[in-house]
Length: 309
Image 1 (cartoon, helix red, strand yellow):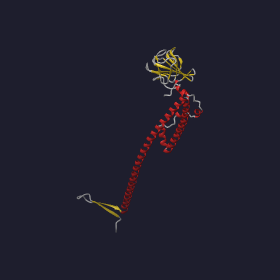
Image 2 (cartoon, one colour):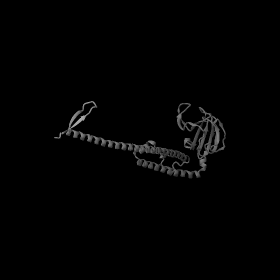
Image 3 (cartoon, helix red, strand yellow):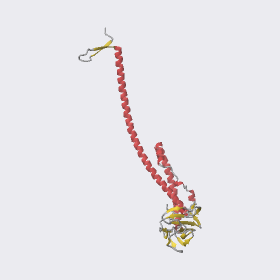
Image 4 (tube, helix red, strand yellow):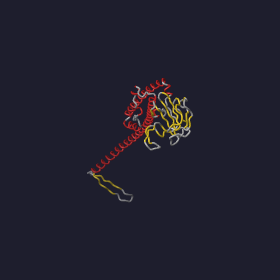
């Protein structure tokens, strides 16, 4: 009769006694089956994890590639942002320049000027941070936004071009007025006291300052800011040595506290001609030029007439 079991003999060594174990066939089959299942499960899981590893490795390479491309795009967009900002700054400078031209040519109330949108110098929200936000929201959104902003800048540039065309036509017909309009700095220096109310350096009280005080080295040249005729040259109360030039069209300029005069009453001067030297005569705390612009006898800010920034 065939036994319903397996005998397992183990030989521990050359001199050791063999040991026998009896296993039932049912238990042995179950053990083999479990072992087979475990081997298959191990092999299956190994294949799965190997595939997952290879896939993740491929994703990591692709992610690194996308990140590199994204960084390149960011650099390109930031560079473009900088270029647009420079264009915006230039447009704002042209706007300021045009405003000054319109003030000195009395065209500030021109119909084209009224129609013009003076917001060229305002922010277009094209900074680096906004570009980065646009990138995060997607390339399509970024491109649409850039397109809208550039369209706005293009429209402003066209309006500016039309406005300058109007000014150019005016200039061609107003050469005499332009040459007689003060439009340059009377000396090289820096403004230590502007136009308007200030605290008096002598009394400490509030007083109206009707011009600019431009600090400069003693003996620096003082130049006429426009063509005109010298109508006053000499000592004047508060001004010290002063020159007054009548430019016609109701415009007069004054140059005070000079150390020396190079012109006399009746002389006709040209814009840029040296007329005096900077000094500290009269009511003065140190070497500087007191410069005034009067329109029909009323002091106005020289800032409106100096075209140079």
